[in-house]
Length: 291
Image 1 (cartoon, rainbow, N blue to C red):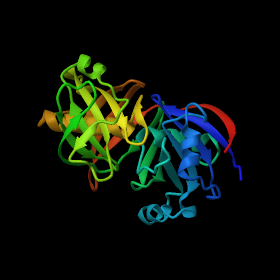
Image 2: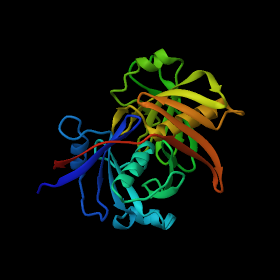
Image 3: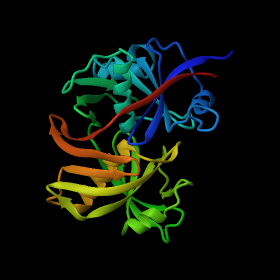
């Protein structure tokens, strides 16, 4: 039986998504159908698919409501291959813009709403030029080795958890970063049990200007391949660079990705330090597709 999906295409610094509203959880798409939506040749095309559904209407939403009863909306996010993912930092900003456009949410500039995700509840604040997402506590998890195409030798990486897994690798200069071929997934050793996004980072010179750290990044996302931006990846890259820089490293970071620039900051909260991600969210066009 065919299903017609009314969708919106959106992006955050070039990290693009297919979004559709299913408030009552009536549309169940399998991995193949989700991948068909995200297919850039035969579908709409995107790095992922986001369903807007009330937390009370799906099993994963029960944990979100237990964490915060006000988390009415759940970001049901899947990678481009149809596999589920815990969180998406660019995606949650675009999700906020979509909820507003669909009339499913009212949120003024400076106001905050809790959003359910598989990685836990995340607080999303509307800003004058986009959104800022509190990605919650973070973990500097340990060391790994990473190999990638056109990288002359394996490089050490730092595992960072921000609700989903990342491994961050520092490179020497822009030329080395530009030469990478990320059409194939980098190989991480030891192998992360649930896979990982892999970020390659080059610090600016000087690293800190005006109290803000500056880095440039490329990323290979598990289940999606190389993308123009990765919000949680930008956060992980800033956190790794901050850790390497040691005492005196700034809490605010400017992360340049192929699709633009996002902001990352570390802030103290009642339950310890959190990492926050800010940036634009653009809705590009609407349409319908029969699956």
